[in-house]
Image (cartoon, rainbow, N blue to C red; front, side):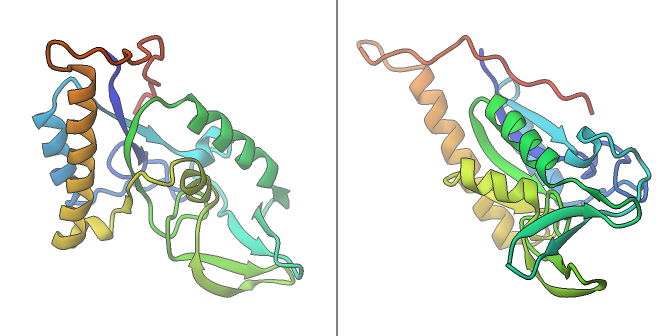
Length: 204
């Protein structure tokens, strides 16, 4: 049976892979883990760290989103002078394209790669001064473009009961709908799902 994915930033309880080598352990993830236990065998968490996938190592110098004078955004590592924009976009396209059915994304807030919100954008001429902190990380941006109807949350939002409930409700609704489609009532003549796709395995 093809498993259904919840993609999650690896630093959120899976591995010490933040730029400073620390592990984030949000208590709110317990509610998502409860959902996984309820639908054991159907949900698979897919931990991912785009920065590690680019070979940046851990710990590593910070990376940041830089806004050029023409408004274009780049992903750079100031300490090394590396421009990671193209590499990150290529990784995002390949990774997201390899996923099967995705129920939701739980991403690290403020991260220049994963952050769905509160990501600082810096002036290209002055990396000590940020333009604003209402930006989105490169991976999160790609997620929004490829999975526009899939719920996305972060570890801070999950700590709010109302926001957590809405996220889990959407995940649950999608899971139940998918399960009913894959296990139709007798007499159903619809086409069967593609069972040749395999779940992406990312070791924690």
